Amino acid sequence: MKRLCVLLVALTLPGLAVGGAAAQQSLTWTAGAVGGGWYAISGGMAELIREKAGLNIKVIPGGGTQNPLLVEKGDADIGMGLPPLLGAATRGEDPYPGQKMEQLRALAGNMSLNTFHFYAAADSPFAKMSMDEIFRGKKPIRLAISKPGSSDVWVFEKVMEYYGFCQQGKAADCYRAWEVAGARFFRGSYSEQA
Image (spheres, rainbow, N blue to C red):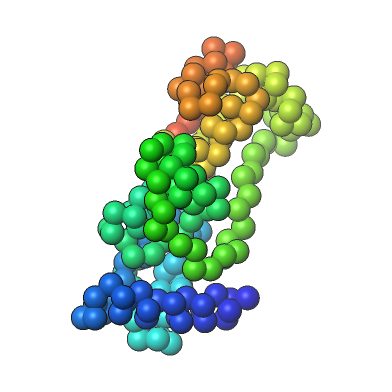
């Protein structure tokens, strides 16, 4: 699988370099947060492409919600993405209302697992509850989430909308509704959450 991804990217990237400008010798790849999985994957892929195809790739920090914007504006040539956010970007939907990004294209898929996890300490009163019980019961949880603007936060807000904490697009109301019930949210980078 890894070889197939490298092959697909190695075959596609030279075409991007020539198409953008004949003299271009490097590309910018927007990844995820420094220290996160996407940043490591992108850095490794960039090194393999540098070795195998002789193409210089500069990896810059980004994230699931920022990367479509960076590529669309030309601040990055390629970037990692999540299918729901890429779909929203091409349609101009939340979190990109009115900004249809119809020029975005997928080069490769399934390079990282797209799963949203909720963890509870084994000795926590929530450890034996389902997500349904926690969310529908508006339990007074303490939750560490990424900083606003990340794909993690976007997905979490969609989960809160699903459970009726707020109306679509009213994320601030989601947090307030649960905080009134006793929940607390810690927002920070992955390393700050650990």
